[in-house]
Image (cartoon, rainbow, N blue to C red):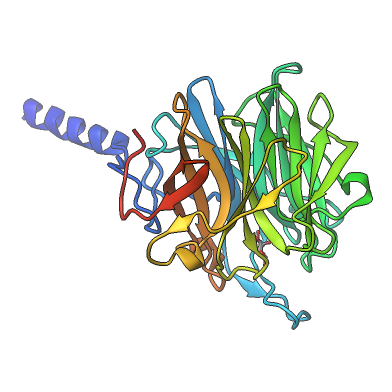
Length: 335
Ligand code: GAL
């Protein structure tokens, strides 16, 4: 009898601690965290710190609504849920670290109020201040605010303390990303001028403000969803066309310096569905630690009428002869 009870105790303890174990990345399929709950981190980005990857993304939860007073484009939206954080050693299995930046549920004038837009959060580490700096797209429900928000934390997973939102040098800032160069300089890259032209702005030494140094790039090309990376001595920028939540063909540009001049090239995606970025939109490119030429292309497979159930397309990206090449895989594992 005693043996039977200790067996029962053991099995219930084991199942309580049983963790979801993912064997591979399955692009476009439901991706569960270690507790078996689907990962909720859209429009995300990755910070690599102390041999751990941290995935930050938009928390999209609850019913998707379409803004009733906007007919010129499909303003499908969910209440702003803040920013989530997950951590991983292998990029396949992710532990939920909690809400890194919480939304504000009471003050409708706050940038972080649930009625607003908090999108595309990205985090970098500042070696001078020892702080983690998060930038994100902050907007009103109709996207008329077009600003970049910044938050800081002493710990990679947060919680992050929101500082402010800015219009860098008086310019609009919507879809954005961050890029930290090898020399420690960091840049904000954002769709500006009503999404017609991108801009690159050098951040202050503490990464929490824009400087006066900025450049207009991809002028008049209507690009958004920027994802920047560097391979050897070349900088690459993958972007999408502006078609809201609907997928389109990605393009990449390259440059010898972050501030440009940038040259537009063609689609880095290859094979079936390459013309719709595999029905997804670029979010970030992860440099795989310790590999010079191996990257991961992170994209969002938006489900515009049910945004919470949008998926993730992560695929290997290799730079071959100076050209980034993304190939579809049903499942794969980063080496
Ligand atoms: C997309 C953009 C998304 C989101 C959406 C809203 O073009 O890349 O991040 O802002 O529009 O419709």
